[in-house]
Length: 286
View 1 (tube, one colour):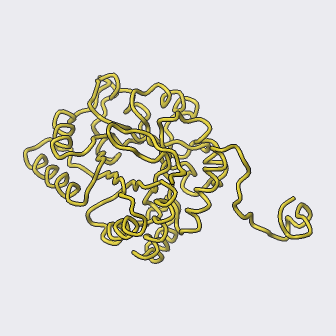
View 2 (spheres, one colour):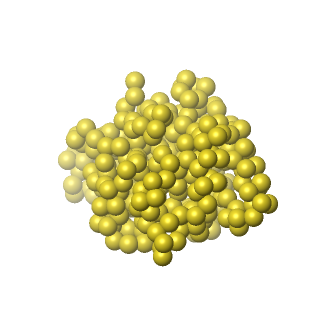
View 3 (cartoon, helix red, strand yellow):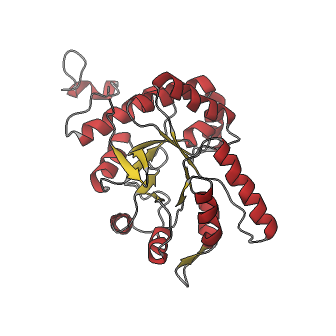
């Protein structure tokens, strides 16, 4: 039975809590040493164990699937087999934005490679999308090629961006996309304008918004980041979160459900000596 609520992105039932892949693939947004640790730690087996936790809770979506991430793709299949749940695959490939015939052919090959791994929602990565945004004309270039090409291949097109303007311009243009990405966290990490402005922009969108970096890439405690996101997003929006281990996934799910159900979380707190004065005799928090 699903625990994590779902939203609809066009015809797809997508969980409102999505497994991110930065902590699968080695993109820590912290230090080179931390990114190296991720790459050395993660294996197909560990990733499958982690994704199994998400899938069993109804959070059966993965953000950042890619054809060249063999261990991740195998781990997704392992988790699907263990749980009997099909994953919603959300891909964010880099596209060639040169606008030449050669770039067009390269991009078609990229799209076909993502069809081959079963991608459901395809959004060009921020490095591609944001290069096409024109603040002067309030437009996003290249969409007359990108959107039909994605639709023809049976995937839902979306836009992955770090710019708050992108979803606004897409709505103004009436672009035929199903969803948007937006950075959103209580620290304002990597957000280009104030948090309250991004909050208002999300609430004004015509399509569901998938938010990323809710914990500011590990700079914010899970309770703080998740409470902020669950408490300020619309019922149609989703949260993408990265975890390193299956235990972290369990904590994230428990905290999320406790917030949604308005109850105390059962996640075990860190019992350090400095907290002895606020702990009960049995060692649990008072």
